[in-house]
Length: 458
Image (cartoon, rainbow, N blue to C red):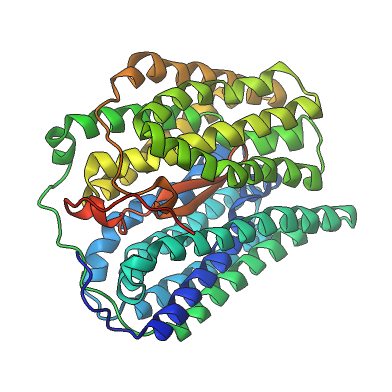
């Protein structure tokens, strides 16, 4: 898709872009309030290892899988804005309903939580392609660098406010003996923030650009068509499976075994997010110099030991150091991963959407494996959590040994990595925030062959 004369006058386009950027802050606030302590809520409801794994991964997987359905849904509607508002309103209702699980018996509370979380995050995922279509219509491509930089900063602020504010709320309510009410308030606030983001759309013109032409690829033919993408996808799926063996169990480990307060847990979860925000531009410049492939291969080894660090010591200072290390290496890896996927697929939206759909299934499989490991140590939650972390470390090393060296042939994009359209994808205990490239809005040089000079976001 190329830019012609933009249908909005520059002042109107700037107001629309500012509104969409502000919406990103509300989106991150809602997601952070809804997701950061979902595992802790499940633990309070009596969830075991397998249930903790599902609660931690079903929302993210639902969001990824919903995008493959949403492309057909978008094609059958007129204005993207109306569809987004409906999807976000449904998501807000889903967020606010999570606290109702407290009213159910233990036998039904956790299954109900899984269903509600799947539906709530699925509604959000359904809106992503329509949102990208709206951005394409109201934000000139020449302003995408500014737009994603501004929106990303607001998302980071919103996410940190959610993590730290949620921890403060839960700590205060727990001290008063009302921990359950604290969780219910947290989820209601998430719903209010999501509705506020939908309300911001009122100021955005009802305009959407023509959607990208659908790819002819069907099913998993995309993996047969590109050896470069096939190798990259196989490596990332194996790594993500290994990663989610341990991801759901860091917060329960801190609550159950280390007896940390919610305030302390919030500070520890926020640490890698802050580190990632502070170092992301550094990694962007490094990726501009060496390319995303070398950065991916180098940091692919560095992320292997992240869960293993938690097995070494229970010391708070050690865990803090582990979180700082995690924020550094995961920030570099996620940037290289996003760039590599866009390069290997040449920005084909369907290829990226199908990759994300499979990745959602991989997350669930990894969490179930981790949950089964925890359950093997029934009645001994501390050793069970540590066993899942150790297993995750071993499983991360396997794709690094067998596949990482084969991930080659990924060139440098024709634009700076500082202009990649990154968005906050999830909240993770050892990453703070998880970043992902928007598959619907790849940089212009990835959509069509061109030789634009590198540029950087302001």
